[in-house]
Length: 386
Image 1 (cartoon, rainbow, N blue to C red):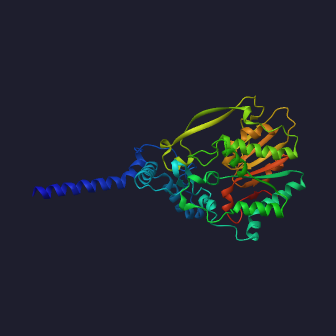
Image 2 (image 1 turned 90 degrees about the vertical axis):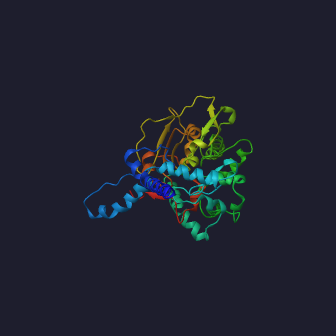
């Protein structure tokens, strides 16, 4: 009898625990009782959709609400964190939905929010099928180049390297590339042979810098200030061909300050930003910066983040830059080379109305190399016909 009573008590407790865990996300959604961790995706989470009494809104409400619920259900960040800790520390898993864990805790991006599979790109798993496929990808750049050429404006296309290319030695051996030629290699060869587009693959410059310094963050997607500096030197040398530019800065013009970088966007995607830290290097100029950032840049719908820099009294050229997040590290270096540099973090969307407004001498389009994985075209031209 006593044994049956213990068994019954145990069953009741287990049912109570199960029901509590089952309802815990809903309870947290109402009372916010779970510890809060940083946004693990490094993106804007979906918002509760607005209800409107029209057929289109009613039809779209379900899908929008599902996205909202997936992004905002209770205990979400805590469950992501627990899941990552379980897989990483106990099960020794090295591939997560968006993050690859390499040797010595080096983290690499697998898939971004744009749908690009950076790991497939590194492995060269899906090369361009042929020249027609490459031409389709390059067509918007060719069209933009011709549009600018007719107006006396130069176009410079920059491809920033991924960490997988610069530090492949920490990637698990079973993920070796299946072929040597990447989609960017194919695209660069096509551009050189068939177009007049001026394009730079910045990977070579960053690899040269790697011989002297660590040029990427271990726990973040991006290059660090050393990596950005070596890329800047490569870009500045090319600008010197076209404009009366000042000589590129050297590392001797900067003081290096060491600090600790606690986590990064990749660590955040695992919900474990507090578990990863590394040395960080900041290049502090020993000269007085002339370029300053305008406090209130105008808004552009296609740009997630806009910054405009001006150098008072300068006769240097004007630039418009369409870029992704890698270019944010280049801004302090390159802003000094222009009288005005208007930067739009638009991820491949080129708003031509901005070019007409700014009247630049040069337009710079910067893309991280894995975006070449997106087919048939990643670059999108907006407002061409206005």
